Image (cartoon, rainbow, N blue to C red; front, side, top):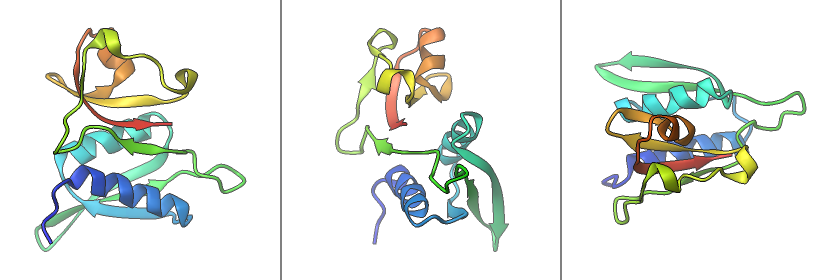
Length: 132
């Protein structure tokens, strides 16, 4: 089976692991996935992550974050731009999600960042996903 959207697969792995209350989840390695994972960690949605290498194959091991009632910090993670339908936004179009509780991950000419950072730097780009 050929994977047409590795980022959608990555987000689905995280979503499924959170629904089944898993402590960790692993996914095939790519630079963009590591960038997304770093943003999730910086915003407190995951505890930690590591890049593991076995037989020259790299994987990302993600340690998920739950509150004291074992509810995931990450409520929803939604793929916006897909291979069949790319979604781009100018920085002036980036409005807060869920009254500022959520954010978008944007791929800009200066790398992967949150919509808040992209707005500060006056950068538009491709909307990878929305998180809240």
